[in-house]
Image 1 (cartoon, helix red, strand yellow):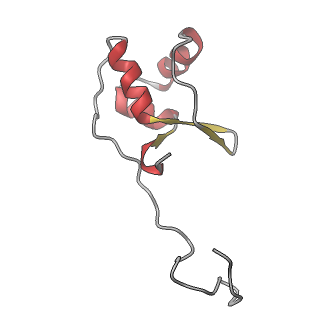
Image 2 (cartoon, one colour; image 1 turned 60 degrees about the vertical axis):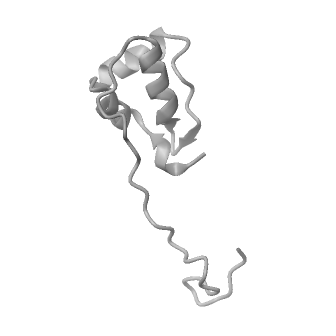
Image 3 (spheres, rainbow, N blue to C red; image 1 turned 135 degrees about the vertical axis):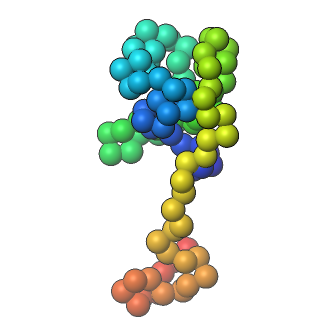
Length: 91
């Protein structure tokens, strides 16, 4: 799973131009609504490509078809052999 395609409920609302209450209703009402790919800190995250595909299949508009999640750089540089403490790290 590529992190740039992860989206929470707020991002889904933005991509589909629907409010969060509508997104929550769709999750409960439609058994074919995509399943989250991961849950982090109790928050479900979906693959936005699956959400957009579902929206198109069910006749809904996709307001932001080129959505990609803002991905932060890793806290650890893979070329750096020392961790933040100065101790060697295993990669």
